Amino acid sequence: MSCMLMKKNKKELTFAMKNIFGAENVLDTYEELYTYSADSTNIVNSEEIADVIVFAQNAAQVSKLMKYANQNSIPVIPRAAGTSVCGASIPKNGGIILNFSKMNRIIEINKNNLICKVEPGVVIEDLQKAAEKLNLFYPPDPSNLKVSMIGGSIGLCSGGPHTFKYGSTKDYIIGLEVVLADGTVIHTGSDCSKDVTGYNMTQLFVGSEGTLGIVTQATIRLIPKPEAKRIMLAYFDTLEDCSKTANDIISNLITPSVIDMIDKNTLKTVEEFYPCGMLTDKEAALLIEIDGFKSALSEQYNKITEICKKNNSSYVQTAENSEDEEKIWIARRSSFGATAKLAPNVLTEDVVVPRENIVPLVKGIRKICAKYELKTCIMGHIGDGNIHPNFALDLRNPSELEKFNKAKTELFELALSLNGRLSGEHGIGSEKLPYIDKAIEPNNLKLMKQLKKLLDPKGILNPNKIFITESM
Image (cartoon, rainbow, N blue to C red):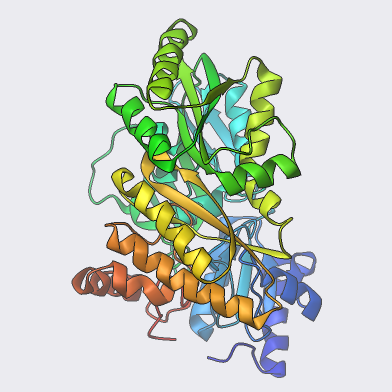
């Protein structure tokens, strides 16, 4: 299938979309198509442009769309906020971009059952704030939570700093409304906190990047909001001391809500971008947050401080009030934006290894970047072995892009050699597709492709994401 429909067919497609969604919910100028065909990978191919953009307002419209697309073999690419950094929402084969920003209702929050029902366009931070008003807590918190939407978060199974203690998106999705490739609407899971009635179809769609079905509503598990929290930054002169401290905290039966690592380059870059008093002459720092009952925090804090000192921490910086806490979190979440000060573009990667292999992973990343002369800031969730190198480069420079692609290949090979995986929370999309057969055994990959074929025989659901869609 060509990336763009013939002019006559495109006119017919736009007319059909206006009949389904209304003219005010359809975009088709080149400028609009170009804009919505990009995501946060910062890589836009002028040949990978959608044919039309539509804004859904309900599941019935999505069902009608899928029936039309299936009958006419037209790709449909679901899109939430477009914050994907793996090319998950790029229209590799043209077609229809299905935007969910107008399906943004929090339908219900049930405090007795500890659940909420939401549409896919709900912004994650808005969901968290709505839950907190009822003293409830939705832990998954990707760094772009102020803009990222729950639909994309489900599609990519995003995580964030709180994943170590509380788990990622998959641990909170207990039911879904899904529109299949032929327009059929199904409901998976239930409102029950426990449910083993048949196959766990809900989890089949979580992390599937819109390649198996399109989520139009989600039932989400909430938990009671912790009574109190405390945040600290512990600085170290070596990566080894930093990593050992994280392991020792956990082995001493302490489970921080957050335990993230920030390397020297990131400390320096963030402090220049958003001054908040971080030390920039240290090799690495641990951002540690503890939460729970207020009466228990002092004991946890004292134990963690003692462990940090035993492992040669040169300084432990503690947030004394909510303003200090906010400064630290803004700094932590600014790592991507701060890196953008170093070059016109930032490309972030996402690999995960067993925690014991963090040091060789970080040192290996530094070696690769030195080899290709790439500016890199490294940070990540050391508690669960998930590391994010942020590469600063100029995509207009073919030489730099070539170096990055070579470095990226070596990064993935390094992670796999350390018993790791290609992604911990960003997904595969189109950017990591070429490496998927190195990470998944052939029989497993074959089964995945069979599932795709079963649910999407014509290959129209977000084609060429995760692996090549053979029917396209």
